[in-house]
Length: 111
Image (cartoon, rainbow, N blue to C red; front, side):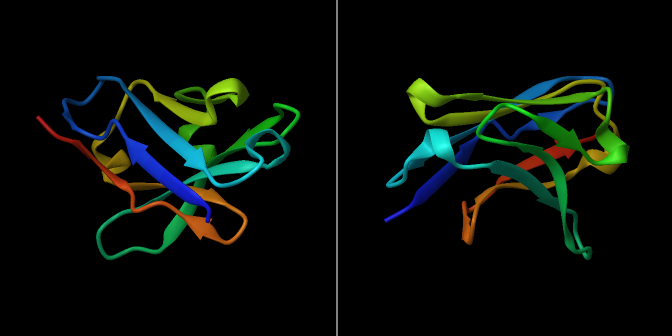
């Protein structure tokens, strides 16, 4: 059974940084494309960043240049490094592979 467990969410001031982690199990991690999504209060869940099995990445326009997605295949973990955080980055961040989702981790950007 595929399980995705996110961690690293926190309250941070504008301009700050956080690194989110997603630990995956029950799947052949290295062959799967992984995604980070976020859902702000009252809004739809949207793609933030994606990394393919080959390590190719793509980002939402709103986070380009500030966020970096990476993966550690040996550790079955995908990361999202978030820098220069803005209040509009406040959301629950979810890890995704195929049809599977984690439970999310809350990021709050506020002074």
